[in-house]
Image (cartoon, rainbow, N blue to C red):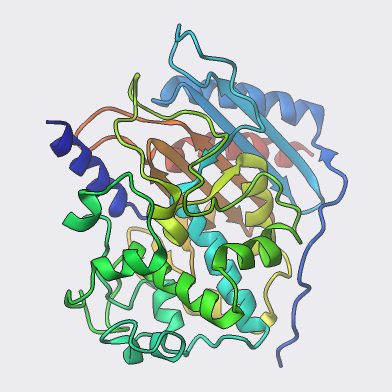
Length: 382
């Protein structure tokens, strides 16, 4: 029974959607934090508490980063379900597994290497990993970033399912889908696959000559002072993160960071996510050429959603388009998105999936809009 339930959880997570050239600056050092208007902060605190009553999680954290450097962050609820003896108040600085929001960081790293000339979006997988995939000569970096390479996912395959909580190397994860046919011809269609980002991590390691986790730390996390964020090493476990739940019960099986890898293995907090999303989509992180490619090269998926490069664009009736990524894994959920109309970014994280078939793991996509309502109301009277 647990195995069937576990498979449903994994299947649900595996198909969650989520997402003349001058070189940009390599980092945006964090300025001294500027507190938002006290009235807005109180309104956001109250709104987050209200959101908690509509979420299946015992606790939530959230943050909003504005282009002038001002920032709000908050927390509501507890780390454990009500009356649990180990529970405490959720804190704004608490950390979570951010699941597929990891792809925003890894995608940003890949694009930075493209801007530096170390990689090209047209590079084939074969160029960097000779013999690494039977169709590697036809699969490009851009296709992997945009999920059009057609490589099937590894998480739902028996070798992974039967060793779900094991430690893995990236090469072992890719070997799981060895010999499986492509879901589509490279570049011909969109099909979300965590395998695409495992392949990107292997490309980064080959191109930089160092483990991709180190490249991420040195080129993205440290320069941008994202101190809440890290990609745990292969056998480190999740470290100091809040526990996760399925309803009021502990989440039944926890995938290790190495099992999710570059597809979903990072740890972070709401403040770092909002700041990174602002840097990634609202700053000068990328060259003008790549920024234009991201804007003009969107792949329409339907339902007001587009695939970008290591990200998605979602059209909300309340806010217009937001650029970012969602995530759900191991009982954790989140959304982090950038609003071009007001040049600000948001993140919302929760530590439970709601019980059901399938379980409820997409609620941040809807509930975060209540925080934007407070921001818009404040801007309208400012």
